[in-house]
Image 1 (cartoon, rainbow, N blue to C red):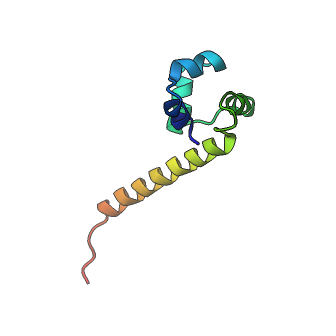
Image 2: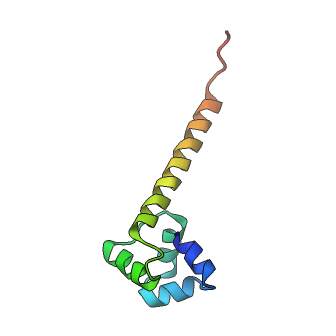
Image 3: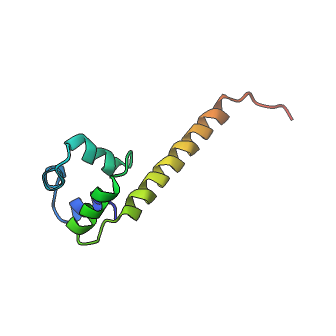
Amino acid sequence: MRLEEFLRKNGLNYSWLVKRLRVNDETARRWIRGEHMPSPALCEKIRRLTGGEVTANDFVWQILRRQKRAQREAAEQLVEQLPEVAE
């Protein structure tokens, strides 16, 4: 489960997470957006804090999905810039 889903499902917010993990707000937002992955130690704290509902694997998959989406968008932009080829 993604961290954002866990927070929403349990009626929690960034402040709750930030306070318990002792990280700054922007760091937590980057994890949630899939821009960065927490350190192994923080992944373990998050796993324990969420009762195992959010694991390191969830962060890895979220980052991979984000990267794949960015690559697809970049490829689409390149294709749009190519001149049309006459048949």
